[in-house]
Length: 92
Figure 1 (tube, one colour):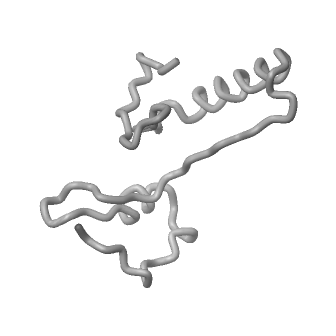
Figure 2 (cartoon, helix red, strand yellow):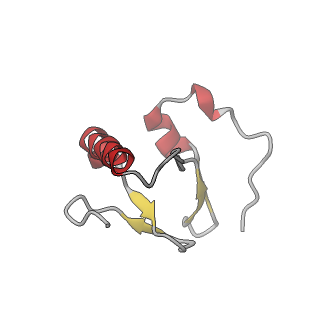
Figure 3 (cartoon, one colour):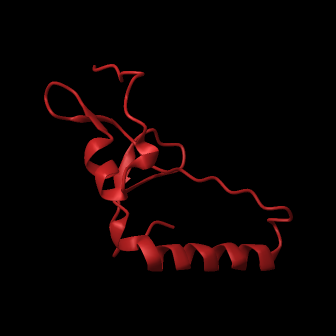
């Protein structure tokens, strides 16, 4: 396995396209061993209320409308691996 150099570039100044190509670390076989990505966990006060859950659903639908074609993978609950995203098979 390849170690990530702590002197790696500051990715905050890169465009999304540059991050997609430059912020990827591969092993000697060319397999991806690490990459920069985004993981979001959101917690809501009174999240058990129907109005809150409907609001979260609206936010998720809007996010998918805006960025669904750019999503490549997602992580299933209790899984350590990523699953390839398919817009026609949205996970439940």
